[in-house]
Amino acid sequence: MRTEPDCIDCPENLSANTRFAAFQSDPRLVAITEFAAKLCEVPIALVSLVEPTRQWFPASTGLVIGETSREHSFCAHAMHMPDIMTVPDTFCDPRFADNPLVTGAPRIRFYAGVPLKGPDGAPWGSLCVIDRAPRTGLTDVQRDGLHVLAESVSHYLAAYEAQMAEEARSAEAEQERDSQRQRFELLADTMPQMVWSTLPDGFHDYYNARWYEFTGAEPGSTDGAYWNGMFHPDDQARSWDVWKHALATGEPYEIEYRLRHVSGEYRWVLGRALPMRDADGRIVRWFGTCTDIHEHKMTLDQREIISHELSHRIKNIFAVIGGLIGLSARQHPEHRIITDELRERVLALGRAHDYVRPHSSQSNPSGRPPTLRAMLDELIAPYQRIDVPRIIVTGDDPLIDDRSATPLALTFHELATNATKYGALSRDDGSVSINIACDNGRVEIDWQEHGAVGVKAPQASGFGTRLIELSIERQLGGTIVRDWQPSGFCARICIPLSAMDR
Image (cartoon, rainbow, N blue to C red):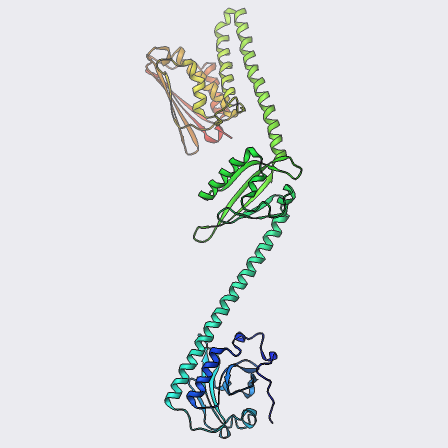
């Protein structure tokens, strides 16, 4: 029974899901079928791609139909053959004698098809030539020519398939990037901080909703480098320099500055950013946040003012106590030795407190944190000579705080006082060396006197010795080893580094 095939130009014949749909009537493939028909001297030649339920023809010569069902396909057989499949007379081949394409249009009597296969060997279809009259076969030239043409078709289709696969992967990757960006923006918009992102060169191209809520800026108005205009005029140059340094070095970005609020006031914020790098270490993007710290900073400023005032009053108390001791010494001269020692200890504590107390930018313009060597310089200054230093401090310089400063000040005040009364500093040519070494979580301080004569260990421990033990062992959790050598007193003090600065 003859079936009337649909026209090749009908859009319903174009399979939406076929990977080679774009090749419908492709001029390059049509040229190949035209040449194949001339080469083999047949009226019909076509490229057939076989799908699960049909075969369709992206290019053909001498045929007006665009597809047929797979069950009637000659090419469905040919594509599985190792070489050209030839059917000299379809009437004599039981596989095709009753085929509607034989008994009806296009009335196939001779068929020869070369398999078309993908790079992985998977069969796609065939390049075939058809005659309406039986033939004995093809010549060697015709067979070789069909092989060459089929190979060209396969390469052409494979290249297209690879291109389509790459485009599909790119589209899928782009879709995944869009999905990730949407998830990131959704997450960023739920954060209380202002979130922003830049290109590798620092061009700002993203801000979350919180940024626009805080600043009141129009979306897009702060892209690029226009963000800097939102800062307080006094902070713009500084923040720009810090940001340029981060871009040049790849180091983390962190700075405090004043940002213009939607209300018109400037509020303190903490800006931070980190670079994201690829597998080769190249920066591909910067991600940053701005956190409103205005209330916290105002609270800290108030605490600092109170701390400075309290510290100043404590310093005055030391001076008052020293004055009272001096007054008592004048009223009771028979206790002058005791009162002088007490007054010196109080003054030593005052100097230690003044060194580690909270400072303002005016009282401590250097801005450096308190260290052991710097405090020792303050304590031993009264014992030094103008022409030649008598106490020399060398070695490491660990940090200290207000907790460790007091026992350290009392200890070294007692050591210096004893050296002045009984040891090396009681002689004009005597000296003291103090060496500090930090190792394995401990601080070792060696006190070595030089130039003394006839130094001997005391018969009994006095108040100063007990004061040093209380300071080093009980308050700082350390140890002290004493050695009374004839040339001068020596001591090795070991203190946990954690006890020096919390």
